[in-house]
Length: 257
Ligand code: NAP
Image 1 (spheres, protein in one colour):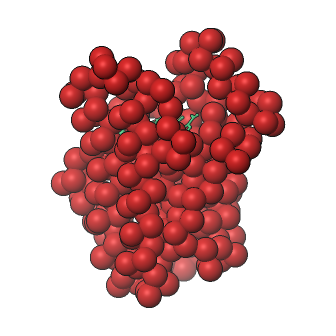
Image 2 (cartoon, protein in one colour; image 1 turned 90 degrees about the horizontal axis):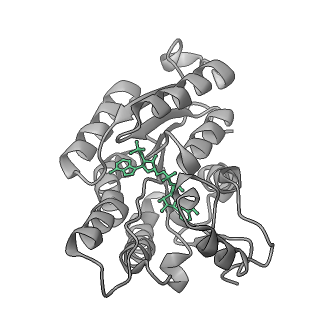
């Protein structure tokens, strides 16, 4: 149970982020549902948590809603700094940081523009740096904190047409391991989850041919569900995972084994 823990989940209005937010709320955490463009979807996630799971805490947070939406473009360092500060001002602490937000701008390397490379790098890698950079001061002060970064199997084995995405997601793994080493002495853990093919808007946008080809590489023979990622996030955020840091957990139906 994550009672009275405050969790920030980036990109939590839809897809994997939404499933993570709902699951952490189910474990009784207070959840900040970050979004960038999808305000309505974020509001829906918040409403779902506040109606279905709302278990109002006793103590200093009594009466507060269990979830709150927060607009912030994670590629913007200043906005990330303000978001983290606002959370700490409101709740007094931040315990779990889930860097889930991400984008794709797929193209063959020969055709890939600087803009396509930079957009993915700015959101998928620098965005993760920004939130950790700002949250780490609070984590160090608290001598506690859980960082869970969502990378991808593309960051481990690469993927044709995703040089920008794979580079950024591999960067997330290196960033996480360095942060894990840097913060370990204060009891702070940092881990990576590398999903395979999970059913969301991101994969729905792929052509049937690409989907079929990916499916043929999955030993379990099916696409994953967002809830299957969320369960692992809840575990890594829990006390049971207190001795796990700097690890990469692939949740991919066996794709990368
Ligand atoms: P999705 O359905 O496309 O959702 C992407 C989420 O990221 C949205 O909530 C979006 O928020 C948010 N986001 C994008 N840019 C943002 C920004 N600048 N600031 C804040 N939020 C931003 O994607 P998904 O499939 O759920 O993917 C979630 C994560 O898992 C990503 O990091 C992705 O790379 C990773 N992943 C997914 C798969 C898969 O098969 N689906 C596989 C491996 C890894 P708004 O809509 O509000 O802009």
